[in-house]
Image (tube, rainbow, N blue to C red; front, side, top):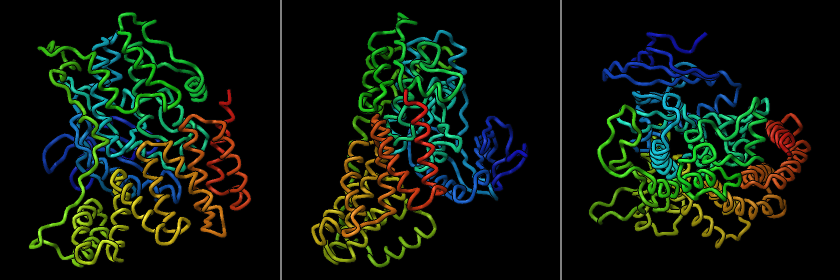
Length: 508
């Protein structure tokens, strides 16, 4: 039975019209917003298609990803209008994009002009630069998730939905196959490793190679075969197929397709700067429909070094306007209870300077508020702002109670999670490795559950950094201990076993 029906109205407002996409857990429909009389796209997801706790986790992540996605403001990103649940279904209402998806656009223009490929990739870099600054990793960048609009501008679809499907602990399906599109999947993602902005850059390289050469760099009859080629075969340089492609563009594609994430460009901003040198000169557009060079009369350039710009810090209000700290704390509790996390973050950030003035910078009240501020920033996906707060809390607590203090270690653990989310796998790995001895030492701050989780994260980060031998050794030892402590039927044991089986299949 389908999860949607033509004419059905969602949330007393969105009337489903035409089914335009369908997958194992949901559908995408064109629909009409009856209140504002406009066409929209509605995505319906069915958490009840998976069992028990996974369904609850999917719901939680869906709400969070919708909220975080709605915070990204960029003309090259599909706009989120609404989200919620109805019965067993989750729904996401998005801008309806009038145009052709990039796969169809590519098929209708063969060979694809290399100038068009540059223009598409440059626009995608602008979007990725804004998305990665949040930070969000798209995880499923491919031609079917990119629309070329009538004015030639490119719009990226499905931001956040891929990551809703891909939880921290389930990178492979129950059959041991990778989640996502194998042809566009970076080696570290396919192997179950930690993902980051570098993962999207690899997918961009695959997409650019396909536009220039007519086909993806690695194909095969099975997902395993494609993965093996991603891991071990060098891509064919595109100039062997299209000699007119500039050498600089071929070199950039090869860098994007580097097996080791550390050998790829450092950011979407850097890729954009290389592409900018190859963009068409300013002038009159050709007038051709869906010409992606048209926006480059002046491109949607990403903000220079936006990801490295620190967020503005809250400042104390003038004396006459200082807010009521106790009242603000009550308001934050109410907002958090209603799930209004972004608003709670803003209030906490503005109240901290006033609280420090009233009670003292190191008072228990201020310390509690700062803990809540850091935790709420993490809940809101604002890892870049949470990281310095957590480091400061960890350092202050360690100075008072020692390096092995459980609360200080917890702050460091959450800071490492921020580094992981921000796409800094080497820094996250170093922090987890520094923490592990404390969690394994029962006479200091031993915590068996956190010890197992840290070891799992170390294994995934090693995969992300391309060290499959060390990852295999780490995960094999972890599996032995999980089997012994929790039993072979434990979900963590099953997940590690699937990853090890996959690693064994692609040993080469």
